[in-house]
Image 1 (cartoon, helix red, strand yellow):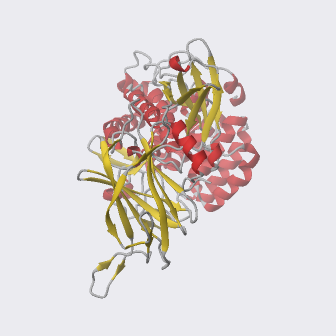
Image 2 (cartoon, helix red, strand yellow):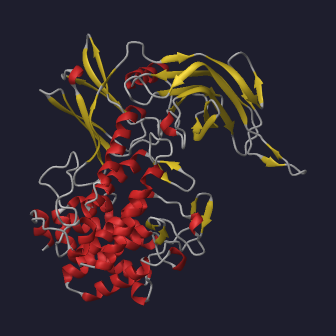
Image 3 (cartoon, one colour):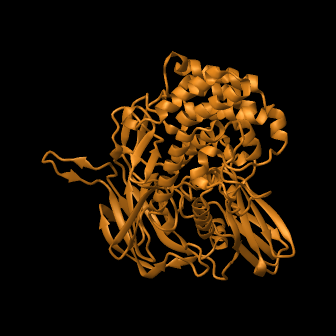
Length: 574
């Protein structure tokens, strides 16, 4: 049955009875820009998971998108099961099943998971077999996650429906019953003012003040919950889905700490890595389809707008012709780029062209697309898609007008040295930082800092947004005699924003790229000072820093040319 289902399109029916109160069952949700095909209903009244997935593959896509390729899946799966890494194990089984249609293989692999975690022996959740550190807290093995504790019941539901074996449904019911409990009782839910929240990281003895509120983990589990409820006509579970969905929408504004780039989690707020922002978009697509709530479409557009501001496409017109420039090294995480392949679809109204930038690699030359084009750049817009393992790529930026490169290239910004700490000057532009150890506590109880720091007071204000509307990108370039850790603070009046960067390479010119998107809770219009803090934990050896320079990059072409001409390296990127 599954093979034939995956080859045809099952007609959509109105929403399931369980979801009548959620959507009203009166009309389709607004079309999400970039989707192809017919209008889509919010909730499906199809009798099985397999039929739902056949009709709406985008629902399962984000859940199985990181499942390994078939060529390596078996060995990888066995290791995940042995190590007790349930989220990846379940995704691998689901992904392989829906790619190949081999129900017998999926059943055998599911039995391995059941046996490894003792599900038939009374276990009702999939604990992790390794320790973890989150927000500085060390969590022993045995912690659990709503991601696997909802996707495994989804897998059991599909097996029960496909094989007719009611035992899988009974096991599913036991796991769902436990997952619906509060985290304090070994379940996955927190009951909050606006509804429930599904915890991605939970452990025995945890209290609600330790909840990290990781958005993508909550979304991931919520999609699985909604699919189970839709395919089983479970009205009580549908109410929980509605409750958690309402809380999701209510909390969305909290995930914009700096107003320009979304946060990964709320407790010890952390900015999103680009691929997690892509992941959230695909999960919002699934939640929009399941819930019929158009506010999820607004969340998608907010993230697409953030990508357009932060990852602009630059056009270059010269006597040698026209070129398009695009980079995955942008302000949020220049050294942790979107790991997926980026596809650009560009059009000037008459002609369309496609371009591709490979992900995953760390080579600098793989990080910037620089392609000739015949398009009329004055009228060109580009949409950007991220190939994140789904059956169709995820649209991350739609019809953004390209930014024409400026004539001046990179701008060297003038500054004066200001505040300094543990610095020995070797000349006008060179200084030594030593010793470089972690802060220590003295015998009298005071703290002694072994960090070194220097402040660069800019001449004039540095705007955080370019004239084109894209976020301004700038950088501090310095050459240490040995590897050294760097923390960067940007200062705007009394507002100070800080983040850590990877170790600077010793004996090389390092360009630390910055934009306001890379700092949590830092929505400022301009910057007047940059502070660089150096440390080198456990090593008491002097490091000389030379050639400290600050550059502004009005466009991506200016950054590309600067990297090519200067030979500078990006920390973390070879």
